[in-house]
Length: 503
Ligand SMILES: *[C@@H]1O[C@H](CO)[C@@H](O)[C@H](O)[C@H]1NC(C)=O
Ligand SMILES: *[C@@H]1O[C@H](CO)[C@@H](O)[C@H](O)[C@H]1NC(C)=O
Image (cartoon, rainbow, N blue to C red; front, side, top):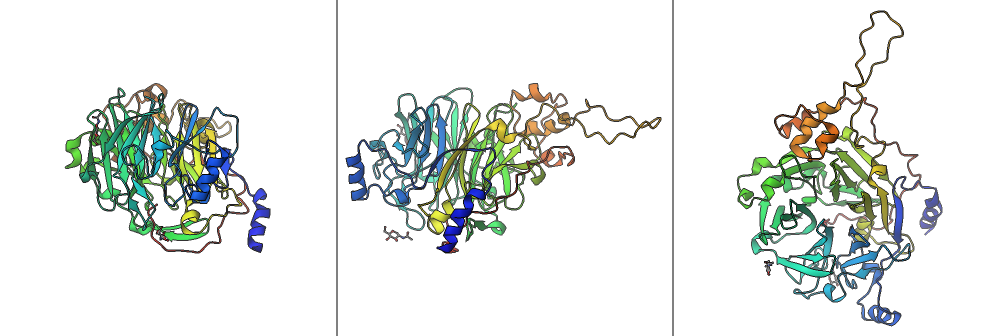
């Protein structure tokens, strides 16, 4: 008790996120009922138990900010919800079910949703939602309904497609939380990808063909050496967790995107072209089309990533061990020196569970202290859930990820007035053109050459040139230096556990 009191007193001294603005925060989630009486009734019947709700996914589309809440415990009235962004500002808004209360009915396989994790809106105003069909969480999971993709028309709030995964798409251990949407030249030319964390698979779905297929690869497996986690003072092992965070690059010069992926129990980033994923026949014989991109280095566990769909191809991702969001400019090789932390907060950003970039280039990020919810107990007198926003450019400013049309070469210190001093390199001898050839292999977008003019790109290099693309360390671009690290961190005093969990 005395310990808790001390923590509360010291919290204001801790440094908060520097670039991210806290937009919403909650001690516990709650729902918008039509009236007070129906809310009371829901509480009395156990249909609403606010302390059982843990938000895990966000997405912004115009005036809606979607928030998903899995039904891991009883008392979650709706798994897919939104906050109206055009309503009068409320720092702790209640959730409104989407598309409706009925559309969230537990156990109603035809027209309800059971448990939803990550959600994605696309440029054709569709919302892509995977219902896992489950109730409860490991090891107490009931499969009420099959895995089903639900797609909604955001303009009419009608469901326009429901696709049930084929039995061959899933295995007995299947657990899918992350999705990525690959829009090609038209709304019809859209594919969706789903990472099967515990079944170690990647499922592709074609909107046009209304059909799915499943890839397997050893890169989907966890790295057994990095299965130990320390978050919020809790130590636990998530050593079985395979392919998890996935995101897509902008469309490359060859007309295809790159899917980046990483297992949860891993510090390594992998990639595969959507040219492979879109082709059902590549389910076999494509082993070598999956590539190792690089390593984030120690404390590099990540569960959520997103890529700027504009011209830059900058990736943002959560660093769950560090209460931080990291960035990587895909023009650079993937290694610790080229990865920066854009923001960090040891109280507010404990488990930054999801991150998205909207059409206005705003970044949305939610933190939810998930390991404390699962492994110990949340203190509901404290703020547990936060949604932050920041313009993407603000987050990247001053980091190695900041997109630059060029960067001047490093000029050695000039000798003062020594006759016949060696010629110093001209500023126009830029490093940038050296860098971008390698980029073309992975993430070049049609917009990109305008900015970067990689005129020397003739042939398309392979991924292996990625790691040879060495950037001088002393180039004046370093990770942002944070003001003094927080004097106080958020540690729960809950029980330590070594239980193996899914997330
Ligand atoms: C599993 O569910 C049952 C019934 O809801 C509950 O009593 C039990 O505590 C749960 N077990 C775990 C490990 O969550
Ligand atoms: C897509 O496939 C599903 C089977 O899961 C079927 O029920 C549905 O009618 C199909 N939709 C279209 C548009 O073909």
